Image 1 (cartoon, rainbow, N blue to C red):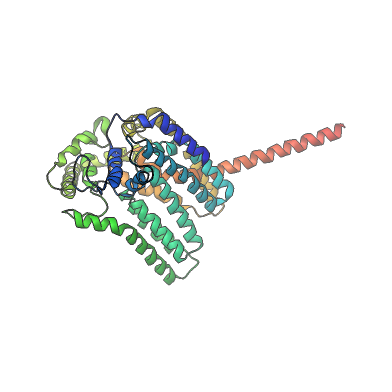
Image 2: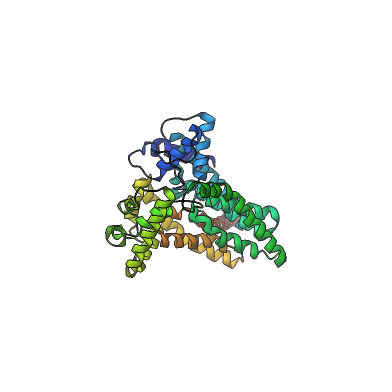
Length: 415
């Protein structure tokens, strides 16, 4: 953790603290985080209207530093908060790896997390990805605990983690049906009736975690709003001519999103954008298979990976760092496949490490493809990479001992 934190702090202080050339989602997070200290609760940048463009937890975490050291110009302090979050990711990935397959797997997964570019890049950006990784690790750790000890505390922990993840990125509420429900219902150490009780308790905790933000949105906006008003911009900007063909295939277009207009509050604008985006997709349904394939290909760096790195540069990810992350990701993929084989042969449950890949693929297919949307799965990938690396290290250690023993025998014989 100390080494990983040092990498992230150096990265912030030497690279991303100077990232002030473009305005993207990080500006919203920074403004809303500072607004908490200034006495305004989630108001639009450059305005006073209420906003729920993103869920609140990232801004709340970023804003916490202002109550400790006060407001300061720039975003360096907020980036350092993300660095601390990134260091916490190292800890919880290590705990997850240990819970899945033992201490050496945990230490190996933590080590990979500390140095892999796709983990320290988000830690230098005022965005939600570092926190999403942390909560992904916590969700998966809670799943393991639930499968091994199905009880109310573990059910509450799982519900809390899933609810908090949805307060970081709204679409990740899908982890409730995809991870929480099957984890509770497949816990075979208790009766089926007890499992339903635990499921009810876990879902109740999810509701309690979400209730303050959802209640605020329902009481604030004209159209019904639960977690976010951002879906309209997402659907409008990802369903238009600029991203249905050409160089932008499968991406998101700001120019297209401008068509949402400025009349009405955010919920009204979101509803308008949702309608226009779905309408465009319906009118161009023959292009949808190609567009969806491009979106998914971009998510997994299988389509235009270098262009994707350049696109991500507009969201605080320097191209050299993204290319380094791409190279390491390609190295990790075969190791991850090997890890699945190792865990399967040893009859170690690991299905929950694969589920996030399906959830994120679905999200990207419905929205658009960016590398940062894949960040929660990076947590799963390093845990899957660890078992074959541990086995290789053990094999090398055994071979070295055999050679030393053989050398000692030869030396004794000659003596």
